[in-house]
Length: 140
Image (tube, rainbow, N blue to C red):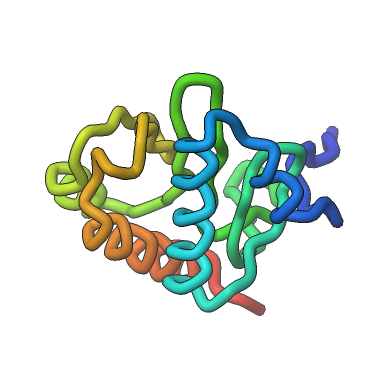
């Protein structure tokens, strides 16, 4: 039984979305994240669903038969933090050890503010994440 994918790219303006983020310090961090993500991927930021800013995309297909589309890397402002969506493969822990103050889940890294992280390491994480996903899910 197939289910429809909930998080897909939309026509919503990234600029309009970012302009509504409060407080201003979080908005500024998200605007800077957009610049970093676009710079490191070479892809424009696009809204995915109502509150995820993603760059690039790939098609995934799991052994279970589930497949769909997703952004390569992205971020989303949340109530108390900013979620960074980066799939970094087996070397993830090496990057996270150098990133700075954060918490992490399987493919989500949460930061309170951009000043808490090493931006050079974040850039490395983005590049590695894109390379990992493009190798794992090559374009057909």
